[in-house]
Amino acid sequence: MTFMTVDPGTCQRALVVEDDPAIRRLVEKLLQRRGIVIDTAHDGREALARLKGSDYSVVVLDLMLPEANGYEIIAYIKNNLPRLPVVVVSAVSQQALAQLDMDVVKVVISKPFDVHDFTDKITAICRERPRQA
Image (cartoon, rainbow, N blue to C red; front, side, top):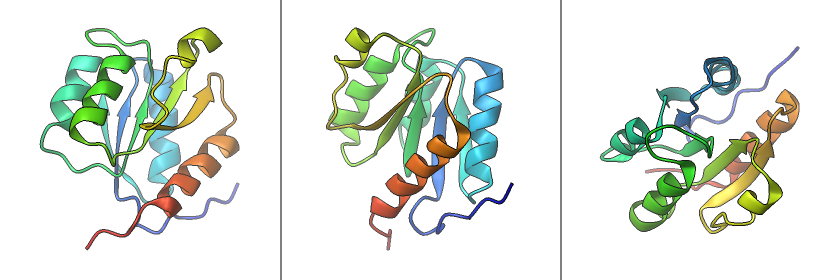
């Protein structure tokens, strides 16, 4: 399987917020293969702490998390980091997904997900981001 590297000037660093270790490791591998540096958070409280004072290019976020749910993290991003794109990777209902703030959430990917679809969507988001000076 061949993977293309994303231009590191467009997506340099990602925060992966996922409490399931297997999914977290898979997402980390997929992003690292594209040259993206990964930070992880295992719960919502840890994610909020990492977001403060950090410069991420993208956040990959599960909605159902211990400590603080994904909706709280999205609200924090909207109020404090409005230009930070969020990719939601979750196994919640369509009704729950309908409550998402799509100004912040750029892509929703349902679990289980196809790795090629996931990486294509991340690559598209990275290409949309302006280069940082």
